Image (tube, rainbow, N blue to C red; front, top):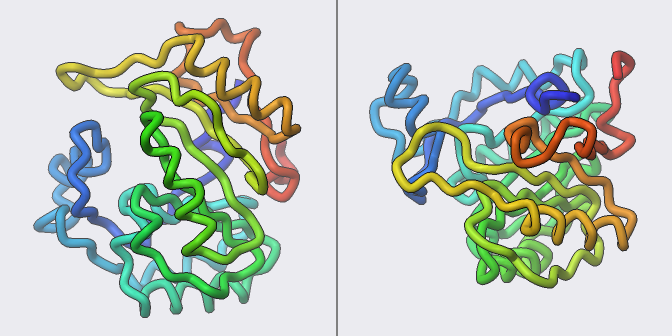
Length: 221
């Protein structure tokens, strides 16, 4: 079984988010390590752009400690410029507020996705397509608070499913049938699915599906 953090490394160019999700691990990390004074005010670490030149890994997540909707336009532009200089590396973005984005031209190696936790949040898929013009789109279902029902997976290139981690009071544990509903719909569309390691216990290890887009596969996998 693969751990996603060993395959897709985080480069936190921006730290901070003003959405305020109750289950936010990034906010807790910020409070613990005091990376920035106020997590609700996103901060851009421009000096980290040089890290995008590192081709040790084939894919990097750039929003592990932020939401793309909180990035300023000049932060995005500077990041895109550096990404275009490293065309063989894939760079991944996530957002919970695609309606706030306005990206008309993205690098070919950019992957844009939305997080979906409930059925009503499925609207984020169409909002992503409306507001971000790109070559690659993906979906993350983590944490799941309910069965999300029928999904429109047209033009989706990758799906990640997980459950809530940590010890939050009222923590949501994904149910097998919720996860299987997503997986079965993805299989029908031949979309690769990656089940995160935190689903162990809900699923046996021999039940895990851990598929990656071909462009994410490095020499060591």
